[in-house]
Length: 446
Ligand code: SF4
Image (cartoon, helix red, strand yellow):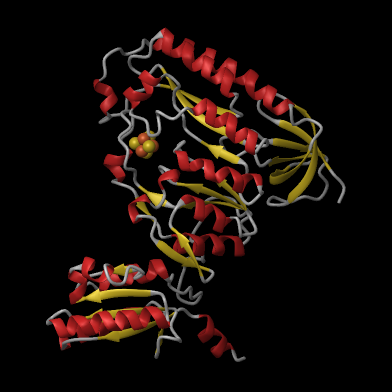
């Protein structure tokens, strides 16, 4: 096969059916021109296309019927169909008959059509034209990368101003996230860190719409995304997951080894009164029982969390409740912040400000108790064999991380005399001893 035909075979292609008047035709030409300038191939028929755009006409009933019939044809011949044009002004008329269409936009919306095509069939990468490598520019080391799955948040935690800055939740379609993840792994990334403001809510705004990746149907929801990511040859680590009931379904994926048995859940407090004042999502869930169940189903699960002490109105009793909860939850990794007001946050108006010295005292008590728990959890891993990803190499030791350590925020595994390792290598080690936050290990032969 020549280079040219190879390129043609791998270039994403779009088919276009244009119905209706010359104005619609001009819209179609505009869309096609933009598609070509972005590097897409224009396919002559349904079968040759990766995706089909139907530009509809809704002028009279006959034209509407023809448009609906054409959408049906495109769906049965191709399956991936975007609808635009005059009929798109009433999307419900289309969706009620053809619920499988990927997206519907109205007339003269070439910009929106392109955005939709980009998200369902990512634009091709042209190394001669694009200055950005596939997967985008990254500031992280080559072997790990953050994978952002949504932007914004639908909650109103009283200490947070993110929703007012970034708006409501907007999830990225699963196919698009997977394309980015795949490109990162192809480029040598070995660990994907899934992030967002509210990872568990992924897909809610899209009503869990069906999307496609590797020619399979997936729902745009966290469980499906985790399963799809688990097919890639990389560690997958989930951050900012609130304990919604559906999170339980992720645990079997961790137990099977599809994604890392690691959950970053920002609990923030344990007192129901304070959680209510904080307006935390999923605050009513019985978290201790859930944690115990997760560990029964996946004993190696590592849980990291963050907490705030000294929130307005936090009494001695609330704080003692938090310590009791912590003693029972025995979380592996914990960060703790002393509450401080953020300009524009609702919590600033709450009564019962906690004096700074008291915040400080509570923070120390909290950290001391957690250090003991963390040390106990780590010591249980001494003697075991684990895989470690190497971040830094020094003369006589290397610094790596186990499945239980996210970069920057958790502990490290210090590997003595590792011999010929480079950053990004994944090596097997035996854990020899532990301290409050780190593990110390030696490389296993092989
Ligand atoms: S802290 Fe609350 S409001 Fe802020 S981003 Fe997280 S869930 Fe949303």
